[in-house]
Length: 184
Image (tube, rainbow, N blue to C red):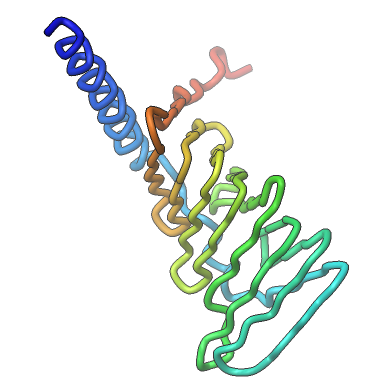
């Protein structure tokens, strides 16, 4: 009976901590700036050691070895990438794997957002990055989040997180910097 009570308390503590992190993340949202809106209007360029490319409707281009993808201030790197084109031959999605796969982008205030994970699934149409496998997202001057799966919306700066097993989503929210005193 005592073991059951402790298990329930531990489970409740984990749920409370996860809920607290979620509330803290939501409290952070109004202070966040949005990703550079002009980035998705820029051409997407890539380089890799090997390319199996198609420029056809509903096709997938595969890049391997030292993958680097840029679009405006957006930079994605990894070991392998699959670039998905939709029926209109527009880049709809990029899936990158690596040790780690990496994404970075400036927001409208030129603050840097970086993300690392084993797999990065970036929805280029909606600006959603899903990072899975030891995921971390850091926002310059704002804070950072860690979990098994993090979803970052570059349009709203909303971050949602999940953890597998007994793991927890972890977050740190930095206080807003105060202006220097004296003004001289």
